[in-house]
Amino acid sequence: MSTTSAVTFWDGVYAARPAATDPRPNVRLGETVTDLPPGDALDLGCGQGGDALWLARRGWRVTAVDVSAVAVERLTALALAQGLDGRIDAERHDLRESFPRGTFDLVSAHYLHTPLDLDRAAVLRAAGHALRPGGRLLVVDHGSTAPWSWDQDPDARYPSAREVAEDIGLDGAAWAVERADASRRIAAGPGGRTAEVTDHVLIIRRTV
Image (cartoon, rainbow, N blue to C red; front, side, top):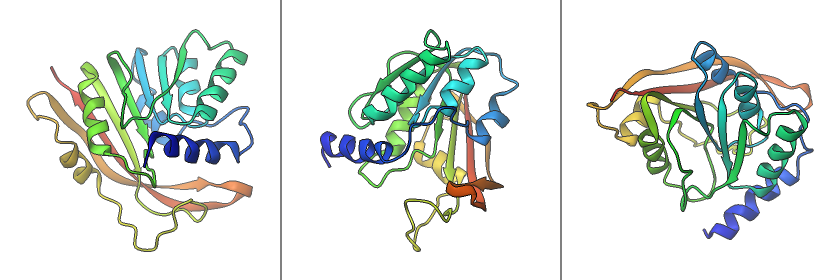
């Protein structure tokens, strides 16, 4: 699909939702990052902005990117309203065609799934190369289908974290897999609904 169709699709997704006033961070981000010293973070597919705002409140300098101009504009406004505009730089990128500049101590990619064409392995490989020595790439993927998910394909298969790491193909001489597992949790969905879901969690650290 063209860049325009990707933008149109995701702008439509976010425009159909009310603008969040205090979006929640993803659970796995807090589990992983709480004990890390703040530095420079890249949030791939920032969406409503909960992860970027959470990181910024804890002293991180965040580059937050999304293909949707609606999502980027909303996050920019939230960061300004919360006095975090000096710590969050929200940018629109179609990751098939451009990748944010810079190097980072943390790259976070939560649920970077799309019904559109995207070479996800190439994007995550670029993310690995954007890490500074000692930096971490955190990839959290769906391992099950939530009842409220936009993707209700009964034949959906969710690659394991190990499979994702192999697909990314970073050289073991410079990157090490620190975590690759499946973890269950109770998730909250629209209208107060809850359901048990599985996350596939992958952490890769750049060693040199």
